[in-house]
Image 1 (cartoon, rainbow, N blue to C red):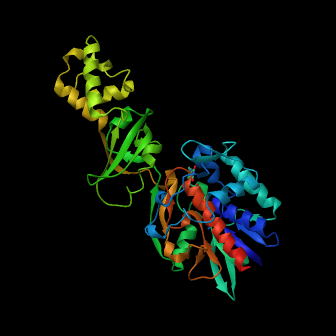
Image 2: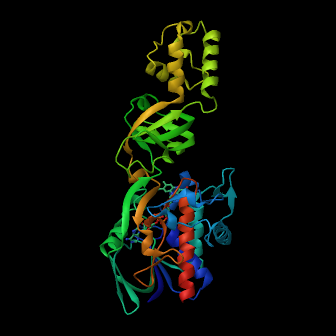
Image 3: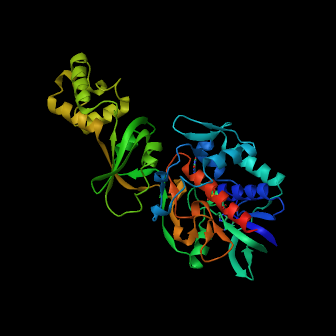
Length: 408
Ligand SMILES: Cc1cc2nc3c(=O)[nH]c(=O)nc-3n(C[C@H](O)[C@H](O)[C@H](O)COP(=O)(O)OP(=O)(O)OC[C@H]3O[C@@H](n4cnc5c(N)ncnc54)[C@H](O)[C@@H]3O)c2cc1C
């Protein structure tokens, strides 16, 4: 009989296990992990560097079908607890200018190692290759049914993640389906922080090129979000942090989505026009195919000239005012019709999940099942890019652990 059985050895599950044992070493805590190792997704985070949290923690960076229930900003287990916790387990944290925080080693694997070592040092039992398929509640005790055996526990924590990153990272959604089958309310699940497939074939021609751009996303011709940063052109469409940050609504709503790129956000329209006119003057003897070279990425410049129906083999002196207007408009508003996202397998987080109304957010305990806690990504809360999703995993883990400690 365990005091606490944690289902899922990912970010939230490992954090809850270590924190519980740090606070009360007498507790019997077990982590049940479906994969052959714990922390497989955590190791891939932040391009292997693990963007562990963000100093600019605000509710507005989190999303849910019930956004008014989110109050991570004032949660007592916020950044301070996170920094103390990681320091204690041996992870020094460094902050970058934009508030993003990383382990000083810049290695996600070192975060997993530190969690694993601390779990061992504190006597957390970890059982891998142990997929939980069902649970029963009887006489104040839970029987957890796994593919191999039954495990008894007084408290259980669901920390199973959801669909992001795909099955190889443990994101099967099996535990989500189990909770749904038990009558837990849920919100539609869709991929977020993900690349976009677009109709525009020019992304194929520009494959591999990265630019710093201001990207805006429109839904039925209304601008709904914008962002500045790196955009990567790919075979299928658009990628890069600036694009992924705009992707959340694409699969949540039916309608037309388009992305507009401002390829030169540092120039306003007037400045751009004056600059192009100046280039016509300066580069009279150059053919149009190199007219934008030295100002825009060469291939991007040529693609834009083609889109403006300007032949690439005429002299730049032949450019007319109408051509210049077209060029300015394309450079400031390069349009891409969005077809879809590249799916859960490429997404960093799942929007939707178990409804927040199912848990008391002060304790993370189910409102219907005493001693059953739900934390991390499986819940209907997702954060923006920048360390916000891991912060939610840590905050919800500390909150659940604290409530269990108080109860015991
Ligand atoms: C490529 C990538 C990069 C990311 N980068 C960042 C970043 O830099 N910063 C950031 O804040 N967020 C990042 N995220 C998001 C972040 O990783 C997740 O939000 C976070 O890991 C969620 O934690 P979790 O514990 O809820 O779920 P997970 O970390 O997914 O852990 C769930 C665990 O439960 C196990 N499990 C599932 N079902 C069962 C079952 N039935 N029985 C037993 N075990 C089960 C799984 O195998 C898994 O190990 C990234 C995500 C991806 C995919």
